[in-house]
Amino acid sequence: MSVRAFLAFLAVCAVIGLLAFGLLSKGEAKIAVGDPVPDRELPVLGGSGQGSIADYRGRWVLVNLWASWCIPCRQEAPVLDRFARRYRKRNVSVLGINVQDNSDDALAFVREYDVRYPQLRSIGDERSAAFGSTGVPENFLVDPRGRLALIWRGPVNRSFLEQRVAPIVEGHS
Amino acid sequence: MSRRGDFLSLCVRNTPRTLFVLLLALAIPLAPAMAAAPQTSVNAVEAEVMCPICGTLLELAESPQAQRERVLVKRLVAEGKTEAEVKDALVAQYGPAVLALPRGSGFDLSAYLAPAIAFVVAAAALALGVLRWRRAAKPPGPGATPAASGPQGEDAERLDADLARYDL
Image (cartoon, one colour):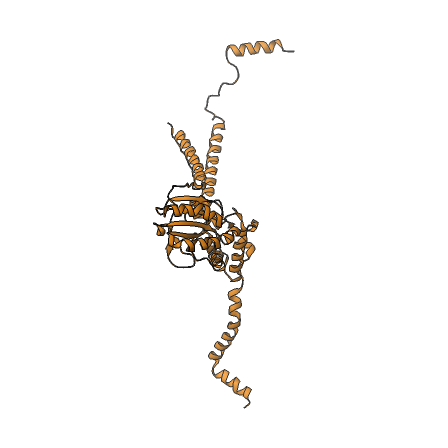
């Protein structure tokens, strides 16, 4: 192979590599029931220190991705808070992850809706991408071993929690 | 001496101290105004940052998230933050994806360097191509054998015969 042909081959490889990188880096994560929950240490909203879903290993965790500007999140937050208080002693926790938001607005939301369940904060949409999220709110039920038991891409209400979530956590806890 | 005279003589005796007090008196009302004086405008920032959810410039976005981001920008500008400080605060809140233009450091620097390097390489390749083309088109020197042009041998004879036939 001549030097010129080799250089041309390298140039073509570089272009194809760049295109592939562009396509792959834009792809969203695909997660399914039974997969390990995407997890990483995140700052605690309005507090010091870090937290993660793994901190709740051994318990059922309903992970709620939310943002203060999201209107359905306002209707959902009190429902989730009641669920969290009702199921606290039954080995179930609710964990909020604030995404695509700014911390002042998020804290104002938590105060306004008197949300008591723990909150983490993801800067930007890194966590949304990890969950393959298409918007907010989205909810993910994680089993005590850290695997996804239910994926719900939308807001939850009382009947959803009673009919879809409660049977799972009561059946297994 | 009058009270006014007493005061003036006191000021003259303590000139440095008087000057300090005067400067302090001037500085106190100015300080908050200077601190809060806008260093940039909301429009200037909006044109250079993104609404990360919408995937468009903030100045073009009207989503609820964009509206909240705009409120934050307005607050930071009103606090007297510079454009760079406002951008830093936005990155801290929304991540680096909030910047419409890549930063001029680290890996992002390649966004500016790559086109410049590509331009230089393309210009060099063009110059090299032109040089080669000119060298190929250069007429042969005086000692060089003229290249044969036109038909030779039998072809030449046949051509001459054909031309003679059509000669008027």
